[in-house]
Image 1 (tube, rainbow, N blue to C red):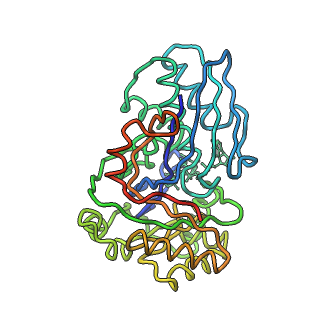
Image 2: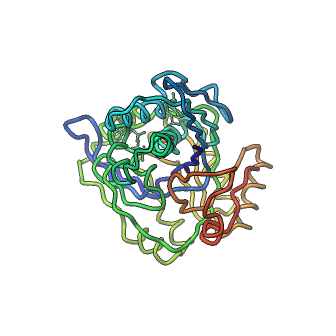
Image 3: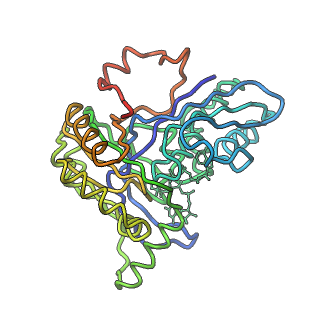
Length: 317
Ligand SMILES: C[C@](O)(CO)[C@H](O)COP(=O)(O)OP(=O)(O)OC[C@H]1O[C@@H](n2ccc(N)nc2=O)[C@H](O)[C@@H]1O
Ligand SMILES: Nc1ncnc2c1ncn2[C@@H]1O[C@H](COP(=O)(O)OP(=O)(O)OP(=O)(O)O)[C@@H](O)[C@H]1O
């Protein structure tokens, strides 16, 4: 059973006050982008994991792996034996703010649900996902959605439009708790008055209309100042993208991956070329991408529909 699951960008990440449970109240526009990890689950007596691919050496292969935790939780709740060997092929930057671990957890939920013939359905898997991490429910959901609470409560935001992104991973990762803590420190220093998080109408309207220029102007991330303070080199990456003509530029989630919005596929290819000349790796990804999909022989079962909905091929420069 092989499943591919996409990465995410937060088009808007509004961070409110810290709650009693230590999490921050957020309002965020999640957007699934077509850079995917692939997870194969095969029948086995115990639960084991191996990781191959980009930055595989940075991913734990013990019980702390988020995909292993997901499979174990699913087995517990369904009352079945947790028997599976998981093989993860990483392409999503690790600790990059693109929810790679959450994508693997979502892929494991979908793959093991099939492998163990549970047929729990997507809503039940989304609910289980919330126990694994704030981003996991969206990783199961895919597409575009408004996330609230600590990010786990989802309202779909349907859009018929495809957007082209250029993602620039950074050297090293950033720890999500460390970035939220830095955000708190900055707020304390600057005397921030707690306000509930909100998402601006301009961004929702631009998404609905497929207006990439307006969407580019509306992108915003409240964690960005914190990510920039922890990794000042990102400032230059964002500047390079703007100088190359990106419609919008921001740090993705807790960073350090930077996301740049392009007008179309050709513009994205030109931005990738510009970044490569400036010495950066750049990845072209389109979206909104559907959530985790079972793949068979490397092809999506409904590939014709998939290609019609998401015409531009995702490519690695
Ligand atoms: C930055 C984002 O990726 C934006 O979507 C998410 O907020 C992070 O989601 P995630 O990686 O799934 O994070 P979790 O595993 O739920 O939480 C990790 C840590 O991040 C911090 N955290 C996370 C989510 C949230 N709403 N407030 C927080 O303060 C907490 O310190 C928490 O202990
Ligand atoms: N399957 C997994 N893939 C990647 N990292 C994992 C996985 N399981 C556990 N981890 C650990 O989780 C840490 C965060 O990884 P991840 O790639 O999910 O970060 P992230 O993309 O910044 O997360 P988010 O965007 O949800 O905040 C890694 O440093 C790694 O040690």
